[in-house]
Length: 490
Image (tube, rainbow, N blue to C red; front, side, top):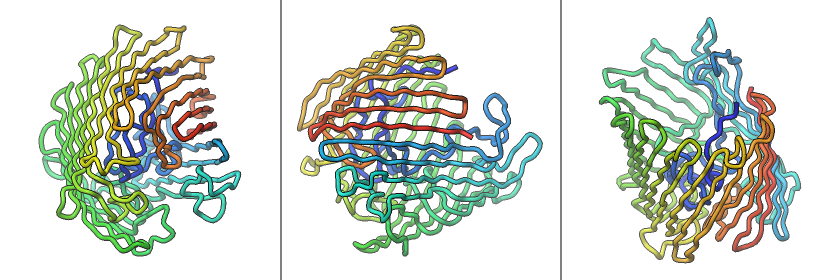
């Protein structure tokens, strides 16, 4: 049976954090994410429309490598293989690209190799992708970072490691190879080692250390690039957790050598079944860097929820080690700003759903406002209904009010989704965004009206296929995009 979720009037647009980039949060279009909110501008895995430069590692894999859904046995080697073709066209330029993503686990990376009658401490993971520029065109507006390499096929490896885990020893985990880490204050990728202790004491404190050669995917050489770090995480009180981080990074680039230390403190607490909150604070060297906080309330019956978020960058970020500041070399300084968001939703009866919220982003100094760094506010309300046009259908309509120095726009968007047989869905719709980031190219577009259609088919539990078309009418021209994706879960 296909599980349906009421959809906002626009598909949820992944907002490109692109690590330290200050890309606008309002690339969301008209998406009012179900039970969520605008993502953080904190450093994180570089997002992409293709899930391109940090693919998901296990695509919903069970935490037990020997047991799958409903108690079914899982194979020793399991993961996801995805192929995708994207064709784009605008005035005077076309582009055709092929992508292949592989995410494979051997055993259970969280707990060794488990089966019905055995458990061994070893596990492994591989995550990588290939990108082929089919038409070979270069020098046009569809060029991406891969097009700067010699040859039309580019491969990248994000994870390639083996791990040993024990429940009995003081050292609970040793991991060797290329590995990535998102639990740290900034997203890290390195070739080296990670060591982790078992939980210690009444507070279940876990100690960890890691280090090795930094992995900078788009640099021609990683000579002189290294990092290491320490962390401690525990649960000193009921319902709460605290994590302390220290990261040291060194980075040699053409414009100079950079070296700095990042300190992080994060606190999470669940007050009761309804309320939970989290906050994270970092310093770079001796200067306060940023603050990230959120709080969520969910009703006891799960039919209503409200979430508030706040982020602030305190100091201008200039060129630093790449782990701490990804884009100053190309986008120049990242100026201080603050962002706040509030999103709420509730079910009205069994078929109707109401969502609404506000997102606000303010640059401290109006003279620093520019591309990827906007003062903008967005109010949005979405009404959606299930089974309105027949069994299995979802209809959603969104109204937006965009406010910025450059524009004052009110817009409407809508999505209609309907089943086509027992294993297929079709969706059509439109949405508007005052500012939107092209997640593949890392460019910003303004005054964007998008029309889209998609068809998704689950051929079996482990094979799915989807195709989508989007037409964008922007301030700078019209864009056509066709995407075809085949995904195999093994």
